[in-house]
Image 1: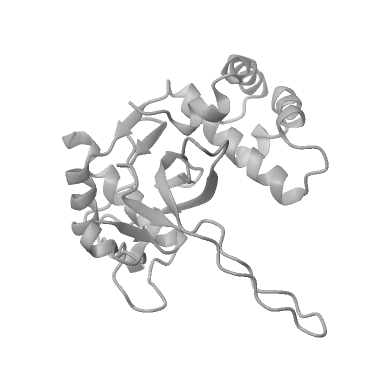
Image 2: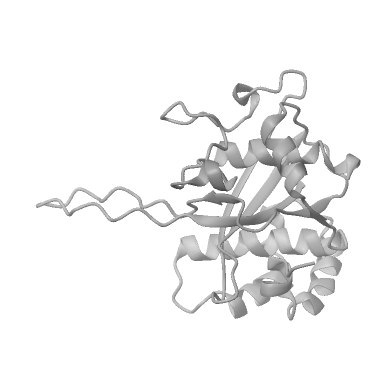
Length: 239
């Protein structure tokens, strides 16, 4: 088993999580309630240690999201599903979807370098005068896998997709989203987050040059991340 992002980012901090569990119990808050989670004293203390000094609101929100998913994964006893190449191909080709989870939280670890995406799309420039040239697009990164946990609404799941894990990089990129799927009509339109591509190409079609020949896939938007997750969840019981 290769390293998970939990082991990379929170392996040394996991001994602090029992204090969070105790605070949750005393507070009577549901572990999935992120708004209550971030107000807990041991969570605030840990955030002050891991968030870089001078970081803005976006950086703080990203650390809260990552810490919350990491805690839920730890509390569920860290179940990891290693998705095989055949299982990934089935998920891409089949239409069944579900948001039923085997555990309250889990990590779906994809085959290495098979699925790619651009988690940090360059935002359009603000309108100064004269206008600045647009920034170059962010490079695509491999999708290592997804933390998947229960969310607040009925049938909803929370997903934190992890991109760009590699030995020569100290961290990774993460994309968080929440949504649900309608198992009675499993089409892209039934995903709460739109999965349709602007260019009309099929979901998961590779966007990298030579990707088709290399057997690669791409996730082009958050809806495709949710769709892929919901399809993979249907395969977990079958191994």
